Each structure stands twice: as structure tokens, then as C-alpha cells.
Length: 119
Image (cartoon, rainbow, N blue to C red; front, side, top):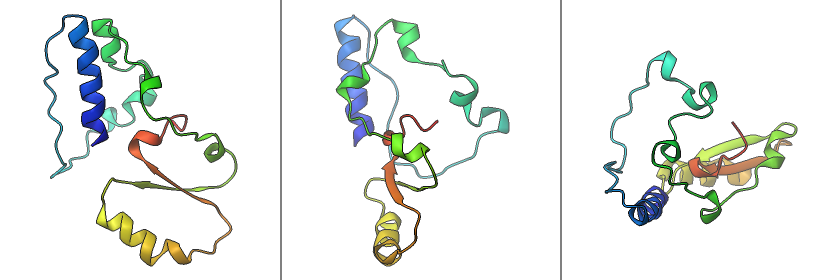
């Protein structure tokens, strides 16, 4: 799971600077509750957000993580399908619908960690 890899990588950087363990638990989603409107699109409204880089001084370099080029997605019309790792519904959509897609609008597939440059 990429989220655990990122957490471990950042934990190593924190350890080097004398910080303790990250307390965040990462687990599969079982229930989802939509937040209040004022919490929606938080990072769009607050581009500097609540970045842990600012509170610890430990900078996590994105250069160590996989980067996806999305420049073509912001030009013209595109269909963007957001997929989850190992999702049976995503697989079924590809198999039953998209394998036979013959539309004129290009389709791109991304996972949530591959959205750089789209917000």
C-alpha cells in the first residue's frame, strides 16, 4: 500500500531529526461520511494547508515518490477515471465497459496519488 510506504519514508526522516513515531493509523476504509461544506476542498481553499513540513521543519521530498505527468489532462476534453488499488468495481468497469469504448474523447486512468497538477 503506497500510503504506508510514504508514512514509513517520512517516519525515517523524522527519526533522523529526533522526532517520535507518527501516530496516524492507515487502514482500509469501511465507512465514509461526507464532511461539512466548509471542510470540502480544504486544500484548494488553503493551499498551504496543514502541512506537517511546517510544524516539524522536516521536509518530505516528492522526488522520492512516483510522479505522474498530467500536463495532457488539463488541455482539451478528457475523461479521467479515478481508480483504487485492487478495486473489483474498477476492474469490472474496464472489462465490461471500457474495453469496448470507441468514443472520441481520450480516457486516462489515475489513482489518488497520481493527481499532481490537476488541482
